[in-house]
Length: 199
Image 1 (cartoon, one colour):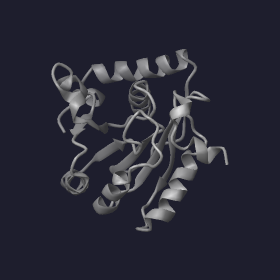
Image 2: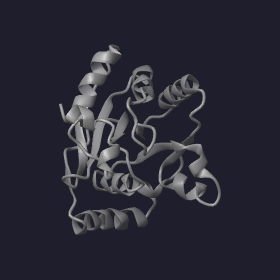
Image 3: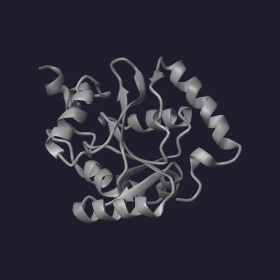
Image 4: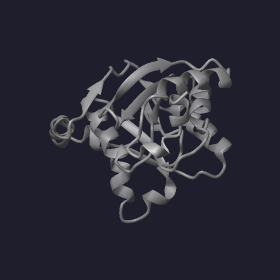
């Protein structure tokens, strides 16, 4: 939780301007407003490409969010581990999911501010079901879920509504996934909710 790319003196304002220019140059625009909350689990979806990360980081700069994100621990090996951590990355091991949920929820309790992005698909490959760890982390930590998106079909990225877990997993997941049903990742055929959107 030390200094990241988002709060590095002198560099952060430059990167914020570069983010605006870069997205505009490639025909992207942003939508929505980041809720004024100190803590939240931020859904990062759809996730089908390595390009999702730079778009997400650019949007975080534009929205002035000190964003942390979780990634597979193997990505953080030398020589890129330090760079990814500086970019807000937090390595995690997919084994022992329940322990991960408990540890992350406890981590939220220890921090005054923490916006943590999690990709429910858990992989760039197409999956049939979303992983529910993000939901249980938010529930156990007592923090809201912020629904961010990256829609390559319209070249729009941003932040949607904030969602408070009710404890009814099935009902809540249906509502959350309904919001994402019409967004497409860069590799549209791998977007896990494409089947929902076609119904």
